[in-house]
Image (cartoon, rainbow, N blue to C red):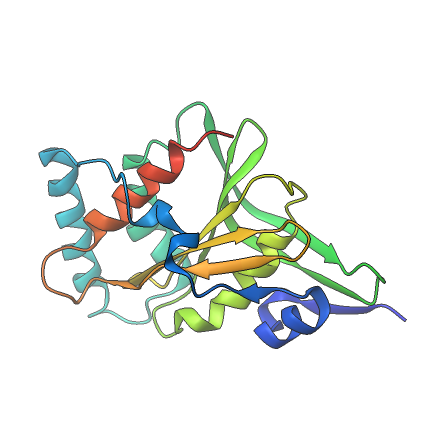
Length: 208
């Protein structure tokens, strides 16, 4: 009997038991968020400063819902990363489905946003409302990324609840393996959206 699980309810334990996914603790496994990051222009920094100010304005008028995160926080960052321009295009709320080898489980749901480059899933993006911990969305994002049938190149994802961001790298090969970046927090001194945009630009430059 095949069991169907909505990805919003999937846990890391489900992905480990059913799909064999493994966490990699070696920082060298994910250099893309740490090295060769491009510099930002003064204009880009000014826009990101406004996005950060907008975030603190929004949190004073709860609830800070998922669509608000997408409009007020994600959209300007993706615009600055040139993900709305060729060779990229963005899709929203794509239905996803992954099946284990013995077809014992199907994980099914909709992905918030994903970035395609010439047909390749460059990045999956899962946004949560501010009250959610990013840990809540990690298994959900990984389940989306597992659907990508490309076994030769890594997949990348980003999780955000508007005030916190983290990046995910998944390599499928024989056994799917993943690792995350550190968290980037808007409440930290300075503006860590600079780092978020630099990483997005770095990932966008990767060959496909």
